[in-house]
Length: 116
Image 1 (tube, rainbow, N blue to C red):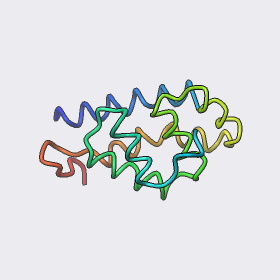
Image 2: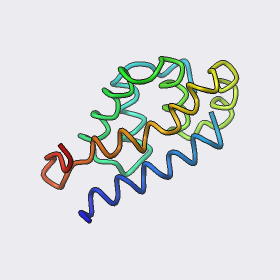
Image 3: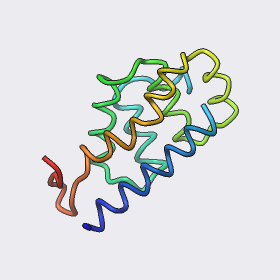
Image 4: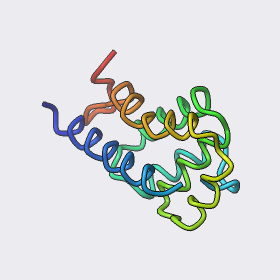
């Protein structure tokens, strides 16, 4: 298995656990802010973070995407507060998002997609 893909999948799995144990932040919205949270708080390559952010913007509700970005930043208290306002179905979708989208956004060392 490609090293970058392995790193991306491990990071996505770790984020899923963080998300499941925590909760979202209304200050973070949009693809750029999601991408920044991903780049600054994970070891996922920049190109994959931008891909994840673009997918989050279209595949998740705004509250769910914000909750996920807050969890990525490790803001547990705020994430728990925001978690109360997001329907459980959207929380579940956001929790699984990183695994599903992570696979689709996997890139190699040259920034080229591993999976098409």
